[in-house]
Image 1: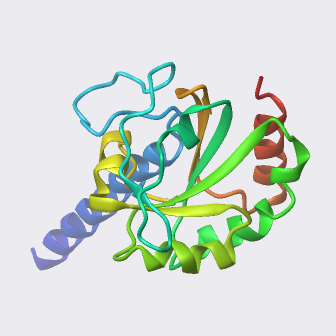
Image 2: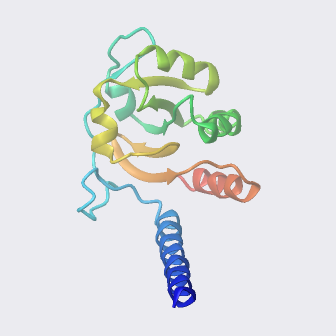
Length: 181
């Protein structure tokens, strides 16, 4: 009887593991389309205006939102304590100069103080701001980093979730970047 019970528990655990693996791997393969913070909504942020942002620079000075709303802009959400973000920063070193018509800015959504933006600027090849109060990242529905968002005149056009760590993902990101209007 105890062998049957042990076998049943073992089968249950194996099935539970497989279901859990399937759920988590399907989440990782989801579309790279940006979604609003409300997880119950399936509406995309693509073709919507950039939500209001309360960003500050490394000195604690409020950043004029028009900086993000004029022209073609890529906002890169990163933190300095994320290994994937640091690798992404090294990869992105050569990207901003490839197209003069696209400006890059970073947002540190999970930092504790404005000074974290200053630390990030030493790591990333673009100006990095701090999300004061985390309201911007919440309205964007961003709960992990790195994430890149392409805007045209303040309208969200495309998103890229994750880091370009492998040769294939780097090529994929460069194709995404080259496809920007």
